[in-house]
Structures are given as structure tokens and as C-alpha cells.
Length: 424
Ligand SMILES: [Zn+2]
Image 1 (tube, protein in one colour):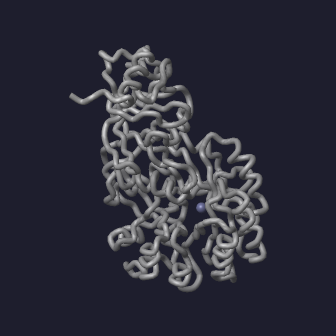
Image 2 (cartoon, protein in one colour):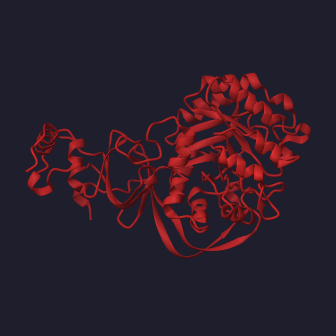
């Protein structure tokens, strides 16, 4: 017989003193996470948990207490929680992370409010992709990041005005690309700033060629932090290999499957510099948006080993009204029908972007101690039609529909949970 350890004894005492009869529930790992008299704030019950960050797939209950995941176990009784979300038959994932979004309403011309996007996209973390530059980053930090319930990180634009000039394009005047100001902004806000954003389309940079990217890299290096560069492509001037060769390991190539000319795929073949970039650790990001996702680029790219590392939406006030519907669950669903498994799609929307963010331990997972950010979906089986940003249509067989968004243990929107006495 296994001897009773001190740890077992403490768990037994805690469970007993907490009022959870041992005869009824036995001694479970979950009970050890509660002190006498405590309950979970929220219990997500019976969902099919998909958490690639800890290689977990299966029906589990998740107990959240004090804003973090306190327990994850096959069966946690409803009486051990103050509130219960019934997730039976649903897909439960770590809170979805959108690495390329535009969430600076009023400050950038195309921003949307993160907290309005959160419940309709089951997204708990947004990365502002260059909405603000050094001159207006303070407003993003204090008026948005400081006030929203959603988690928000940011890339600072190499243009000191960010996207505030839209539709006047921010890199036509290279004098906006102030390396010292951008570097200082990164360094002073390293808690939430991941690096520098630059848009390298010909229409954005005018006659300035690759100079904006050069300055973005200089600013990242001059910041004295491990700042990344997020480089937007699509209609890049000159040879795209010159741009790709400049990207450093850890930098992010966004709109990687754009069909706007001079793409990562040319004549059906991934350009060697793109494959080389991926191999040396450049992060390949979708950034779907209103004009940056082309099936005829993405499909051969995937076949030739240039698939995405991260799925992101590039959602903003304009792209959100475009036929490709660049909302995270819909973009994830496109990849679900491009041959990726649900686990792979969830990894590219949780743990992979969390590693790029690299600011918060266990973000992007549902491990014990992880932030209590959880997304719940219906996985709907049946024919579905998708369209990219260049009018190519594809038929699919299943898609994800958001059901609930939970941030730090609190459910967005109305109270969709049950108190234990009314649990069905
Ligand atoms: Zn964007």
C-alpha cells in the first residue's frame, strides 16, 4: 500500500475542511488548489479542451480562481465553484491571441475597440500592429491599453504618427521615420511593446524603397531590448528577396500570403529567400485583412513548406467590412479547411503568438497558473464557403463559431453561466 505523504494529508485536510466530502469526490488534484472554504470563481465544465501549449486534447473541467487557471481535471464538481459555464459539446481553447490587429479607435484612423471585438471573435489578446508611432504611443498606452478589459500589446510604428494619417500613407515622407524616437518609445514601454512595425508596400513607401525597413531594424537594435520588427509585405518595391534577406530571426513577416504582387510565391514557387527566412526563425504571419490573403499564394506555400507560424486577422474598420471576413474564428476556419488539424490551427492562434509576445508566463495555455483567458467555440460540421481577398472561393467542411470569451476568469457580455443550484 502506498504510504500517505504529507502532501496527501494536506490535500485530504483541505478538501475535508472545505466541505467537499471525500466519500463523494475522493482526493483529487483539483481539491489541492482550494484552501478550506474556498471555491473556484468560475468553472468551465465538460468542454473538449484543445491546448497545444501543453499537448492536451480531451474533455476537461477548468477551474479559475483569482484570474488564473487553478485546476484542470476530468471532473470537478459544480458545487466547488461560484459560477459554471456549461461547455459540453464545445471546443475550449486558451484565449485566442491576434498578433496583427488594429485596436486604437480615435487614435488611428482605422482602429476598432478591442472590447467590442473580444466577444464576437473569442479573442482575449490583441496586438496593435503599428497603430501608434512614437508621437502618439502615449495615447494608445493610457487611453486604450490602460482601460480595456482585453489584453493589448503593441508594435510601435517606425512612422512617428503611426497610422493616424490614413488614407495619406505614412512612409511617403521618410522624415516621419525617426529612429531615435522609435527606439526610445520601445525601450520606455518594453512591458507592452514587442517591437517596431513597418509597411513596405510600394504605395506606402513611395520612392523610399527599403529605407523604412532599414530604419525599423535600426530602431529595434538601438532600443537596447530584444525588439522584433513586424514587416508588412504586399506589392513590395524591387526584388522581394532583398527585403526578406534583411529580416532577422524572431522578426515577423506579416501578410505572408498576400497576392498583391511581388509575393512570397512567384510562378507557383515559393521564392528561396522566403524559405530561407522561415528556416532562420523569421515568424510567418497571416495578417489576412481586407487585401492580404490569397489562396493561390497560400496553397502552394503550404505545400512547399512555407506555411504560417501564426494566424492573425489584420482586423480594422475597413477590413472588417470586406468579403473575406477577417475575424479570428473565420480566418482560423480557413486554415482548418486548408489541411491543418484543429490542434495546429489552435496552436497558431494561441501558444505560437504567445511565444512571440513573450511577456507573460503561460500566456496561450491553460496550464495551472496560466492567465484565466479562455475561448469557447462551436465546431460546426457541414458545407461552408470561404472567399479570400482576391475573390477566390473555396468550399470547406467545418468552421468555428465563437460562443464565449473569458478574460481573467470573467465572461464577456451578459451572464451566460449558471450558479451551481441551477446547473442543468
Ligand atoms: Zn494591419
